[in-house]
Amino acid sequence: MKKVIYLLIILSLESCGSASLLPKTVRHLYTNTTFMPESLKKQVIGNLEINIVPIDAKVLDKESAIASGRDGNYQKERIDSKYIKIVEKEGESKTEKKRRSLIIKLLKAIDKLEKEDQINSLIAYKLKERVLYGEEVGNDGSEIESLAETDDAYIDTFNPFKVNKKYLSVFKIIFENTGSEIEKLNLKDFQIVSGEEQLYPLGNDYFENNLKNEQEKIKNVYRMNMPNEIVIAPNQKVVKYIAVPPINQENKKLEINLIKNNKVVNFPFELKVKPMEKTYNLDGFELKGSVISEYMDCIYVVDNNKRVYSLSKPLLYANKSVTNANKIYGIAISENGTIFFGESAIDFADVKSNKVRINFKRL
Image (tube, rainbow, N blue to C red; front, top):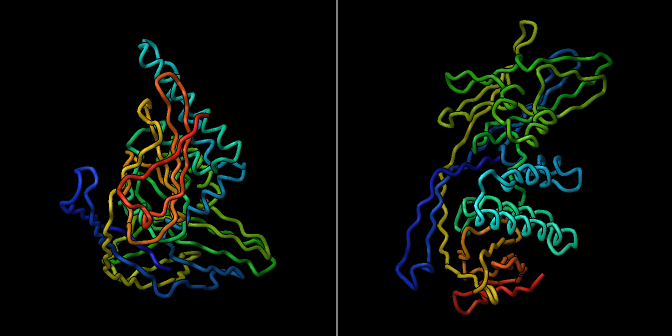
C-alpha cells in the first residue's frame, strides 16, 4: 500500500504579465512510502485470524464521507452546526446586521440550487463553506491538494483519523472467526514498535477529547476505530482500524505485536521510503463574471474532475498546455441583495488570454 506524504512546497515566480497573473512554478518534494509486505495474515487465538494492512489514512476520506452521507446529504450536519456564526449578536451594528442578512440569503440560495439539481451536494458544500469562512478556506489551484492527480473529490471533513490538521498512522485490521466459539480481543492487547519507539493504539476517549466540535468525526470513530474490547461471533468477519501518532519513517522496521495470555504474535513490516519530486508550470487566470461591478461578493468553486475546491480570490492557476475540462461555478450578491449564479465549462488550453469569463444569471 503506497503512502504519499508531502513535505515541502517551493514557489517561484517568473517575471511576466501583470502582478496578479504571473506564471508560477510549483515544485513538490515528497516521499513515497511503501510497506513490505502489503499485508500480513496470521491465526492468533483459537480460530481467530487477523489480517493487518498498513494504509494511508487519507484513503479513509472517501469511506468516512460515504458513511456520513447515508442520510442523503453528508455535508448538512457540519454546515448546519456553523450557522451559529451568523446568529444575531448583542450590540450588532446596522452594517453587521445587513451583512448577516445577505449571508443568510446566499446560503438559502445555495440550498435552492442544490434542491433543483443545478449543483451537486459537494459544490453546495464548498460554496457554503466559502461563504461562512471567507478566504481562509479557499485555494488558488497551485496547492498540493488542488494539483493531486488521483480521481478523488472526497473531503477530509469526516475522517476521524485526521486530528489537528494532521493524519495519524493507521492500520486496517480484518478479524475473521472461523470457529464455533465467541472470540474476544482488547485494544490494549496491541502494540506498535517502530525502532525503539513503542506506541499503543489510540482509544475512543482520545478522539472524544480531541474532536469535541466535530460530531460527524466522532460518529465515524465509533463506526471505524477498534473499541476497547471487540467481540467476534462465530463465522463473523469484521473490519476495524487502529491508529497511533505518526510513525517515524526513518525507522525502516515496524512491528505490530498482539500480546494475549502471555503469547505474542508478531506482524513485522519493512518500510521503503523513496524521495520524489514533481514540478508544475502554471499560468494565472483571472476570473471575470458578467456584470460583476455591482457585486459585494463573488465566490467561485472549481471542479476539475479530480478535485473540487473553492477559490480564495477570483484568480486561478492551471497548466495551459494540458487539455483539461474544468467547470467553474460562481455565486454573487449585490448590495441590495440581488443574487446571481454562474457556471462555465473551461478548457484552459483553449483560453486565448488570461481572463476567463463566467456567465452569470439572476436568480
